[in-house]
Each structure stands twice: as structure tokens, then as C-alpha cells.
Image (tube, rainbow, N blue to C red; front, side, top):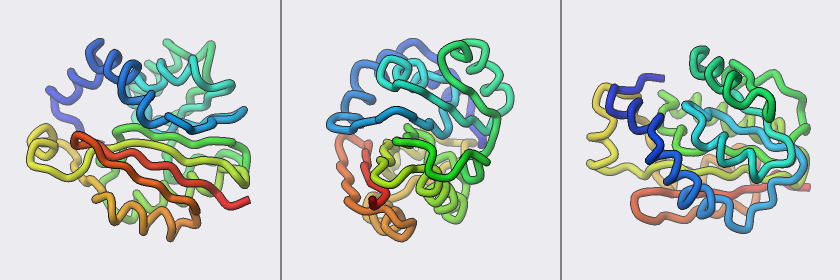
Length: 189
């Protein structure tokens, strides 16, 4: 995962934390029941983790960047389990989580194959009836410009629906608003 300096600054800022807490998570998680165990894939600097702590009964976060995982563990390790690992192969138990979430990170997964492996892993660790929910940007020039010298691999909403269905998810719902998309999908019971 590569992030340019401006992007790193934005993702670690209090302004982004406020946006996540006040707008992003309420929009993405509206009508989503997280249940008893939530897995967050790719929390990065932790703005979403911080906001999830007040919503999730039990939170596990998997972060691929070792220094960010250490930072998250120092900040939130007393309230969440933080794992330095890969969201495409977490090593976590099959069917263990009632919900899996990821926010504004999918475009940093460098290939479609790795994104599909992340979807498959989310499906694997969910219990039947569990929900996979998240958000990401939609392809646009503005979004691309923010990612100069970054990994930039956004998934168009129409492709996301097809790929989540191919991973086994049902009841796939995708909404687009203001350059962002949110999704909800369930693992069949």
C-alpha cells in the first residue's frame, strides 16, 4: 500500500476523524446490525476504528502496515484486538464474525485479484447471516488526483456488485453519493 504525503496527512488528521465520526460511518452503517463480533479490515490510521469502538460490541482490526498496526495497538489495544496481517488472508477462524467492515481502503488494494481475495476472506470469516459493509471512493479525476504517487485501484459500483455476488454474498446493496459508494451484503444463512 502506497500513500503520498498529502494523503497520509489527511488520513491522520482530526478533520478526517470528525468526517468519519459525524458523516461517513453514520451513512455507511445506517440500518446495519454489527452483531456481537466485528472485524475491520484495513483501518489505516484508525479514524474508523476509533468511531467503531462506540458501535461494536467486540472489535478486531487487521492492518497490513506494521507501523500503523503498532500505532493502533498502542491507541486502542485495550478496547480492540489489533492484528498486523493481510486482509486477504487473515488466519482468523472461519464463521467467527457477525460483521466485517472496511472503509475507504479498497482502492489501496493494488489488483482486482487481491480485492477479490479480500472479498472471499470477508465471506469466509463471516458467520451465516453476517453482514459485510463498507465504503470507498468511486473512480473520478478528483479521486485520482488525490492519489498521485499512491496505489489507486477503485472499483466501479457496477463491478463491485458483480464481484461481491461472485464471492458468494447475497442481498448486495450499493449506494453512490458525492463521490463515495457504500455497500452491504450478507452471507446466506
